[in-house]
Image 1 (tube, rainbow, N blue to C red):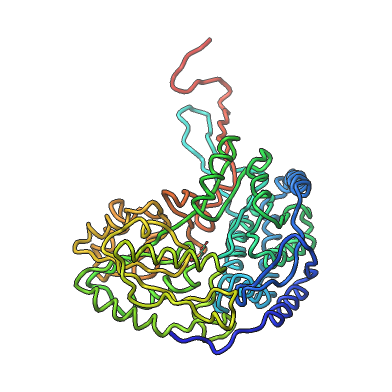
Image 2 (image 1 turned 120 degrees about the vertical axis):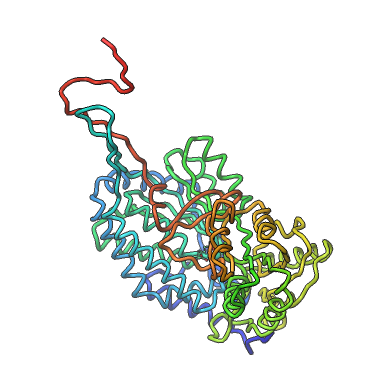
Length: 510
Ligand code: UN1
């Protein structure tokens, strides 16, 4: 594997972040509660002020108040706010991508892709603002009409993770605003700068379109803010993205007050590679899905289930591709693998690989730390492929790092059983040119995930489909398709225009 020759220095990254923030209209933070840092060097950039408990309380009151106006604003008018947000995201695409690279360490092309994902969901939500359809249902009674109406839900609390620090916010926010909800955002403490930038652009869009200024509030700080939102009955929906461990706390707490949740938790995504697969295409798809974003997507490919007949050939091609992956400065256009988010993430990766070896796994390529001299506080590492004989407990866990476990199979039934035999259920794929195999994988007897693909990797979904997964992934659906229903409440309406009272189920009374 090759390394980029040099890394930028923190001072230059700080200056670059300052320029982007200023161009977007954010005053550069000067707080002392916590630090914005960059995984590119692992060093601090700016001090920030955290929201207090009183700020959180005030934000809930203000967004609840704004909801009362926003819910009666006609949906197509609400769409104007989202359209303006989308325009501002387009105009500021490069600066937003810079902030994502600086704070999350994504390579430039993926950071631009994340901003594009935000623009796409805005376009989608603008269209949605004219398509919040309910059904008309055939009534069993003469002279009656039965219908369903969708209404705004209330304040939506968004808790988001570092790895898609802006796009996941936008999936929730663009759709929630079109649906007539107001939003409070608690981003990851690891990515405050991009959050300030998104919040500023939305505030500008609200000013320019005459929307209430409190349709959106940003609260920076630690988990105590999220906990307050989780427990506040005025927050109608908590949409949380993060680990299964986090979801296990959030889910029951919101349920205890009969609030709603939309959970996007861990994934342990696998690809099945059948003997008929186009191996050129499979290698490309697998390397992007497993090593792209330094293995830090919810949708990252973590398990490869290969037919025994092609395993040696495929593995040889993958190890050759891994050996050439350029690792280093995410701003360098040749780099494909940037840093892990933190030293803690590197420890977790090394710990998982050690455990996998103790459980019989064999490293085929990668796994060494890189650039430790150039940036001792940063966490650059070679993506690793580990051959395993079976799904031991470490393989069944999600480690948020570029580890690809390779297993072999003999029959497709066996491959599907292995595929589904993990606690998580986010994304999945099969590489095959055999239509029967592809259809079986997509059928009810096939993949048990929320996303199931053919001849494409597990990551990089478009916004038009619903995004989410089953089992310990939490069951939520965000983004496209009819995921909007999670952000609204429905009312069933029975209208009697017959002039006489007829009871359903033929009941007579009086
Ligand atoms: C995430 O990792 O939290 O499908 C979201 C994908 C992206 C979104 C990932 N569109 O990989």
